[in-house]
Structure formats: C-alpha cells, structure tokens
Picture 1 (tube, helix red, strand yellow):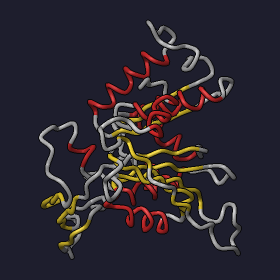
Picture 2 (cartoon, rainbow, N blue to C red; picture 1 turned 180 degrees about the horizontal axis):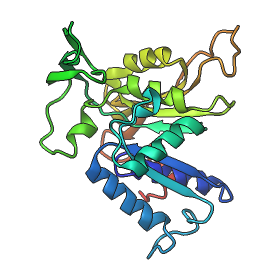
Picture 3 (cartoon, rainbow, N blue to C red; picture 1 turned 45 degrees about the vertical axis):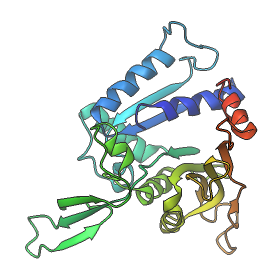
Picture 4 (tube, rainbow, N blue to C red; picture 1 turned 30 degrees about the vertical axis):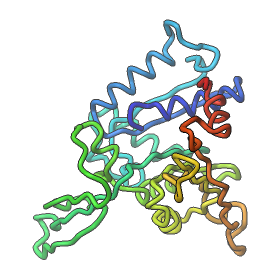
Length: 277
C-alpha cells in the first residue's frame, strides 16, 4: 500500500459518491519507512483532529483504515514470518481468517526481477533454480532486473522492481481475499509490457478479467504505457457450467495530446478526483 495514497484516495472516492457509506479499509506494506509515513498520513487525514482537513469526505466516525506492516503475500500463504511486531501479526491473522472484501486494489511494481535461488539449506537435495518469485525458504543468490534499471533510491527500488512478487502474486492474494458477492472486484494497474502476465496470473488465480483500460502517456504513442484491469472471481456471475464473460477492452485513455496539454478525457479524470486542470 506504499504511503497509503491509493488507500486514502479509494476511501475518499467511495465516500464522495455515498457520504453515508461506512468504510473499513486495510493496507499491507512491507517497508518500515513507508508504513510510518502511511500511518501518519492516515492519522492526519482521518484522525479526530484534522487541521485544515476535509471532514466532509474523510470523517473518522464510523470509518476505519489500518496499515499492516507485513508482506502482502502472507495474506494468501498463511505465513506471518514477514510481519513486524505482535500487533501487526495479530491483525494480519485476523484479516486473513475472518475478512473478505468487496474491493481489493493493487499497484504492483513495474519491472520484472529474475532470482537465482538455492533451495533451503536444510534440504539435503538442494538445487539451483531461476524464478520471478522465490518461494519461502529459498536462498537468493542473485537478482537480475529484466526490465528497466536498478533505482538508486532505497525507497523506490522495491516499488518499481518485483522484489516481493509481481502481478501474479497480487492476483493470487486478491483471489484469496476477495468476496464472492456479485459486485466484488479486484482493480490492478500493470505495465503494458506485462499485459499477458495479467491474463496468465488471473487464470492461475481463478479470476476473470472483466474490463481493461489501456492508458497512453501521449495521444500519438503507438502503444499504451500501462493498463488498468478490473477482475472478479471466476464464474461468480456466469455460473460454473457457463463460460466466463469475454473481457471488454476499452479505447485507450491518453493523458496528454500532441501539444503536451492534458486531454479532455484526462481532465475529467482529474476533476473527478478534485484536482483542477
């Protein structure tokens, strides 16, 4: 969940449309610095005292938002070894065992990392392998960034490169935590170079891709920069004996026109987020 910007924007958007809606939200973040920033931001924006804040949209009464210091993959894997502190471990276990969500969001890192690993040292038949997602107990010998270069910032490197799993891991965790209700959705963004990986990850996690919105940085670009994908549990609406609904790929959304100005479509997106053009 990073610094909790998406967590807060999601709560804000939900309550902007339905002010009476009461939201219970959780974010999971592995980096301690980001967890601290996220919790301070939540305290400022959703606390009982918000100096200069907008209490009409993010009031504290009846709403809650928590950031758990852990690896998001632990929600699906039943492992708490990456969770920091007893309070976080207890909350993670509670969410994993007793919560299902109507909305799950994810913004995976952009660039794939291939790991060369050895099996756990305790395994007598240890062998070497290469994988984009090292399993628990594996000893990482090296990590190679397949797309892009190594960021120089300690904070940005894990956000840009898949050191803790890519879109496949996000699909797997979302599938484990997503409600089976009619309207429950998983919304995820992904680098367009990894478009096929989203489809493969969704299939493996038993999710259907309902809608895809390709996003271009500029109107005259040949290919999108990234995509926004809306997914649901497979067969929730079509039934076990019927094929899943075909994915709807929307026309691309361009951020800027050929003159460098925001397009009218993107201006509408910003206006909906209360960001003036």
